[in-house]
Figure 1 (cartoon, rainbow, N blue to C red):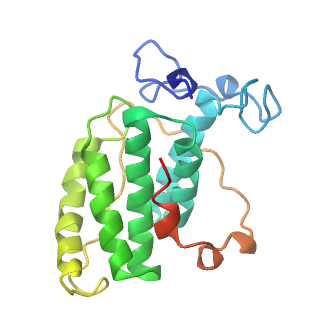
Figure 2: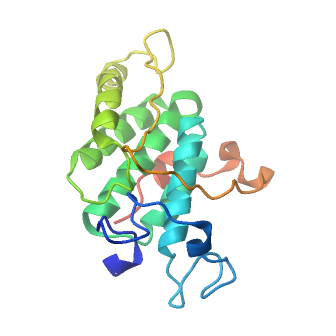
Figure 3: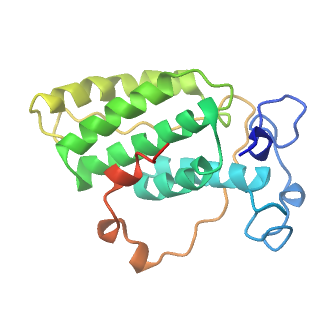
Amino acid sequence: MPAADVPSAAPDDPVSPGHPVSPDDAGSPEEAGGEGRDADGFLTPARVRGLFDRAVVHFNATRFFESHEDWETIWHECDGAHRLFVQGLIQLAAAFHHVDHGTASGLVKLLRSSREKLAAPTPETHGLDVARLAADLAPWWAFGERVATGAAKRGPLTPPFPTLAYVAGRVAMPLPPEPHDDADDPEDADDPEDAGDPPS
């Protein structure tokens, strides 16, 4: 997929993560390709932004499965370092889902994989404060290694979940939540460990 089909970090790009997008710029789902897609079927920059920001809202509310789903929609249409960064977020959300709903081995595997991907440099971070995220995740990296040697994945030593923050000046513009469908319940879905490690 061409890199132009995802928001860029260019300062003069009105839909880049560092610049607010007015609702009028977002277009309606019925336009062009429907559901926020252009005439070629790719997600519009406004739709990518809305999905990304909604994933952040889900993540910060500890709805990790839902954040994973929104980021995965974006991941399918990005490439290069940006693709790895989004995959790192997907795997981080899946790892945190494992704390309460999965296995210790899944938690450890996903923490290690997400750490590797989130450490890779990328110009496209959708306005996330990656320095703060790295600092907030340091206790989780250490905790994951303790779990790998037999510590419980949930207990008094489990760190608090981090929250994602944007750099100064970035205004979040999340899409509204999707209606809840019991068929999409994370407990009934495929293992997020598998979904959190999308094929390359």
